[in-house]
Image: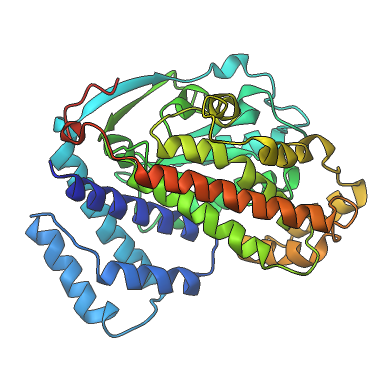
Length: 402
């Protein structure tokens, strides 16, 4: 199978999944519309299922070409056409893909459930959500799953696996409410968290790529709230184009940060630090070396061309990170527990609410470290660019990946 065709397929699935994720997490529909309508108009659909293609073309001619934005009803209609396409892709290719069974961490042995760090209110909302048939499972990943989190620093990483076979236009709003109630509890625990719950289609597990989605090992260090013991994934072996793009975007991100002249606050600073600490992880993934964030620092030491001093500066912030006092935590609970702010408003609010971080950073040192980080990323990107992909003929269906 041609590599470009695989990339087109995965790009489409990834795009629809991210768009759906934004919709569930209350990102303004007008913002989603601008991106979704523009992308979907020019997407190269390569399936032979005439019924779906005709349905899409009819929608395109009647709606997309006439309007720059869609009503919520039209937006959902287009989403479900895309869901049909994804399910047809799944039916067409799953039988030709190699599979792997990954074992979850044991839920019953997990120490944090119903504790102050992962309270009963959050567990209850998750348990309520998984009663919805369209939710196949909800899994917890990251440091909260492995019990090595840092209080008021670590994010709560939840992934809702949505089953498109059970998702209908009638229950999509219930699913949206389920996700919203979970996120409200998460933001009470992690007020500076920069992302909401993530969504993964169950169909994606049958059309998988580590480059586009999550590395396999993430599932082996996750907890299933449905108490599933393992998960089966059917995957494509792809090149590292998508991972390389992520590394390039990091360099662009820090160039934009360097342009910021005004003082920054906790919310912005945490985002910058987290992005810097993800550099080893992103770099190694671009080289098709799949390790977790913690292991990535040790693995990076094997590369003599990479200097770790710059990354040590960012890493030190985690242990010295200030804790929110009770008053600020109370204000945050009112905002997210009662006013039900969406994620876009949450981001705007935090940009103005938290105090400036003059006491946390020396501005001159900070700017110098930003410059060093940009140089580091430039070295990494040049190295990845100069490397040629090995064994391209192995990409596609049958591989010896695992």
